[in-house]
Image 1 (cartoon, rainbow, N blue to C red):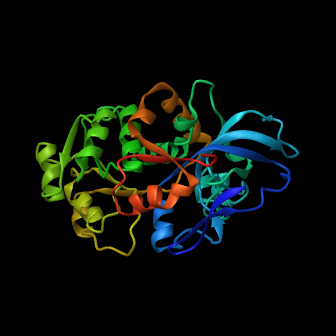
Image 2: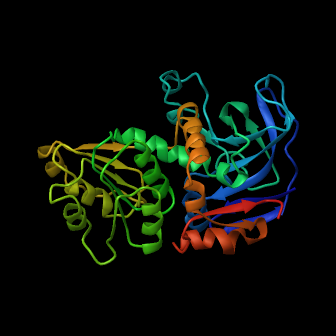
Length: 342
């Protein structure tokens, strides 16, 4: 079968590899129908390895059809359409016992630590899988995993109905966060970015106001959009070096800041200012499969989130020039899907 094998910085090869072997206990083999790519994949290709353990087949966002079952997989059968949460947890460490499986001491991710879904077939543990309703398209199902990541972030922010919320950075995961915050009743819900196309998408996903900060100070823009006092919650999803400190300075006294964007280096923040304003600073990572993936599927099944966020579908041969490079250069306007059989 053909697969996108990542071997190191700038080294990605779409090549023939062996199909997965017979599935072990609790595993299945999936014929991939659609995969999606994200900023993590682009970052690994551009200047990784950051999280990945190469050589590895990329792809942690994918959906497909079960074609082979291992022992002890009674909840599934061949021919079923499923989506994977991609994160694999041990189930026995202290974090798993507390239900925080995304912090598992032995956590691994398909597409980063084990071969993933940018291939014809992929071997997947059934505990990462969720069934797909018949009325959910393959395209929509392919973005269930990043939608679950966004929902976990929204849950970590503890935003409540009627609370003001600002999402800084609404490309990629930020767009899904807007949809998730809307589902939780955040109001007003303000999207901030430097790209008019992404802001237009955010408005379609439920943002009540949008602000372009290409030529504006971020703190000033947030305060101006919230009557000068700042919002109850700021969700920072850019990873820009200045953004965490700006979020802490812009949020309302007694407010909450959630950091989603990954920083490439340590950053200075004004802890004195945050302390005297009693600001809560929280972080988030991945998702909890059992909680977030079913909710992601529900939202994708009942809203137009997929139609508003998916930009195009490409084949594996176009993965580099049509997918990873536009993402790395911030030219992608929406989610890019991959049909591994095209």
